[in-house]
Length: 117
Image (cartoon, rainbow, N blue to C red; front, side):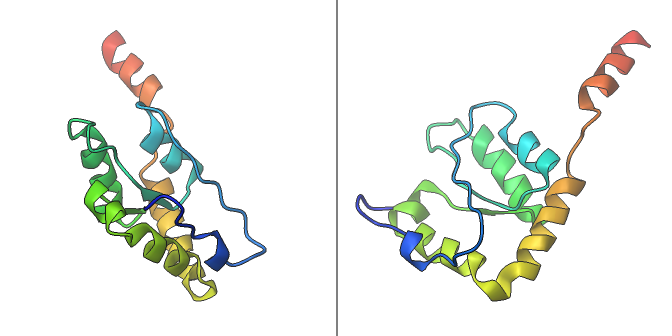
């Protein structure tokens, strides 16, 4: 998105939006565990792992994926208002369900069990 661009003027009121910059590890796992639909903006310098994880969520239907090129082209300012429109509530609910279905809340315990056996 270009400096000075804003999507806030076109977002529906009465909803809670949480823009977040997540850290290098566990971000997608946290999104899935929380069961939240998301718009993912992987860093171009991430050596592919952020893009790969974001693509997995997007292909499953849990997220929208925007690449650095798409952000530069202004696609973020088109995507957010479209997703947050009142008539897209069903789509966001589906994205949330898919995200939650991808969660692995027992991942650490499952790894520990495998190591012990």
